[in-house]
Figure 1 (cartoon, one colour):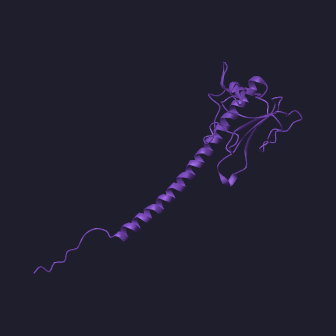
Figure 2 (spheres, rainbow, N blue to C red; figure 1 turned 90 degrees about the vertical axis):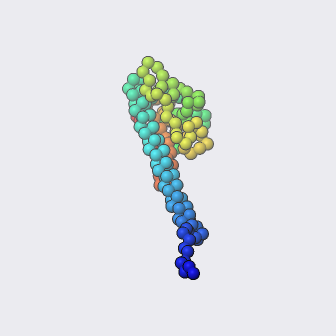
Figure 3 (cartoon, rainbow, N blue to C red; figure 1 turned 180 degrees about the horizontal axis):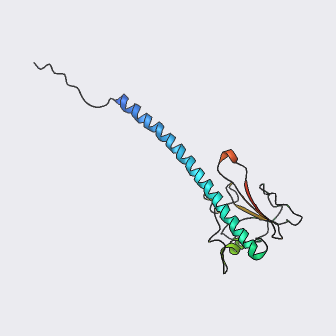
Length: 168
């Protein structure tokens, strides 16, 4: 008689379920940290866009002795934390985009014999600069062109107040 015991090699169903559950939990942590990294990357891009815009606006001012004047804002212009304040600030705010909303700003900075920028920066999550979305870029100027503020928001919930870059 053959007294050898035969052992089957392989995993039990319980072992497989435990391993699959652990892999699922670990992958959910990876996705969360990846989303955070993407958010931080988009915020860094926004800050870089604003630094580029500030440089272009300052060079424009050096050449023209005023900041670009773009369309007229109907009603009381929203402040968005910019606090651009002057006795001459009526109609001094506009969203900017490349869809004609502030074509004057895009034209002033991206055309002519010496363009100041290749193109107007766009928010990475709101490239059309839709005013109904909180991630929007706003260019605000005192109507005599001596002062400006660019307002934008970040996705970082630790600092959810509008970010403001000023020039005067």
